[in-house]
Amino acid sequence: MAGLESDVIGGFNTFIENQRNIDGRVIVTAVLFDHEYELLWNGINAEKAKLTSREFSYKKVKEVIKHQQERYGWEFVFLGANINVAKEADSLGICRDDAYSFKATKAGVADIYGLVCEAVTMKRNK
Image (cartoon, rainbow, N blue to C red; front, side):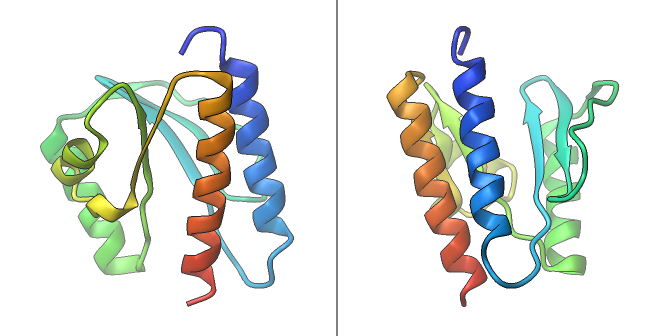
């Protein structure tokens, strides 16, 4: 997604601002991962933080996700471009209904953040 960095950051910041304007409490953690992971955001009021990357297998990530879902009631959203997001989300223990695909374009990035903001808002209003 080279060349879309500012669009992704802008979309994410807009998402955070929109979620801040909704009554109730939400904690957002954003993680970028492929063969490694990088913690991009930890908590809605936290500063952007970059940690040392570590390698994890699908199995390990799935275990961590399951633990957080069962112990803390966390919900996960999976975003991906140019991949089978349903398959990837499922392999990590994330519900296929919470997997969103987008085109790696400026318009695609803008659209996905709008869609995810709506989805998270609906979950919060349950």
